[in-house]
Amino acid sequence: MSLRFEELIPDYIRGLPVYVPGKPIEEVERELKIHAIKLASNENPLGPSPKALAAIHAAASETHRYPDGGTKVLREKIAQWRGVRAEQIFIGLGSSEAIDIVARLLLREGLEGLTSEGTYAPFSIAIRMNRGILRQVPLRNYGYSLEAIAEAMTAATRVIYLANPNNPTGTAFGATEFEKFLERVPENVCVVLDEAYFHYASREDMPHSNELFRTHQNLLTLRTFSKVYGLAGLRIGYALGNETLVAAMNKVRTPFNVSGIAQAAAIAAVDDKEHVHRCVETNARERARLIAGLREMGLKPVESETNFVFVDLGFDAKALCEELLHRGVILRPLGWMEMPKAVRISVGTAEENTKCLEAMNAVLRGMASRA
Figure 1 (cartoon, helix red, strand yellow):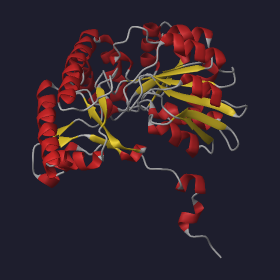
Figure 2: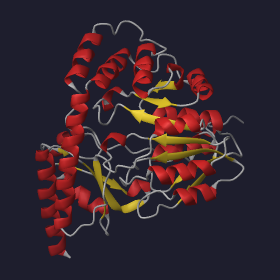
Figure 3: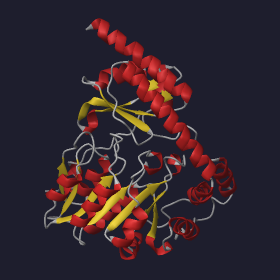
Figure 4: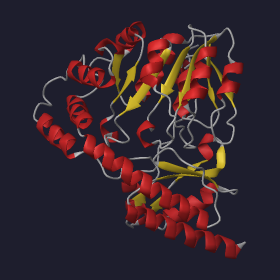
């Protein structure tokens, strides 16, 4: 008796949750026939730097050629910037590819991957997809409890995923706390530190991953060009880690995994420090205004170190987001992350944030009057 096609797919794959992306702005405008703003996916509202755009335009004429499969120029550029060797740099599709590849290399049936509840969903997906045992500890005050994570380690733990600052809550842990945590992690456990929102953090005691990597060879740091560099659509990021691990990661990635256009844009973006500074300053100013506006409505947004704001509404966030959608404001309800009463709001331009606050205020007043 032959198997049905779906039965060929292993149970551990069939049981995986589907990552739910933010609703595309084009889809909302087409369906509702309105102009919309998207504050759901933590994108940079100022876009790429002019230097990156020029590099994209120049590289477009070479798209009939395969890209540099070894990403040599970009790796050397990042290595010089970070003060490491090019062999310690892995270039991938945003941070997502590195997250998956590490799990593929280090996990198998019977081994464990450890992370927190209420954090970046691809961490737990990567662990489960690669037949690892997923272990999660609760958040504490919307942030990681590194002490609880350290206590949850077992002899079977092989990889620990941390996002600092955390997505979706926007909180961050400091250098002293992280150093104490690393001291408790055995050398045979890889600590994956996702610093996608690092540039936006305003706290002064953020961990210095470069220095920590020199004393903790089991630390793998991830950065992306999707956020402050405004290249989310090109899917490019990198990992900094032990040469042996990076070499293994390069063995299992797909050939030519990063396009030539993405490489050219990233090379140019690294040099445009003025654009990065402008993006960080604008975000800090508008983030503060967004938080203040939410508090004026009686809401309790969590202090953020990122380019988004997390709000625990105290009621079903989906209903609020549906009403906002019909007013042309796309936010991110977090029910799919088992946070049904929470919403994440990306920091947009001044105009976008004003529209968001005005729409939220109107919807909340309407909901209160119907209660």
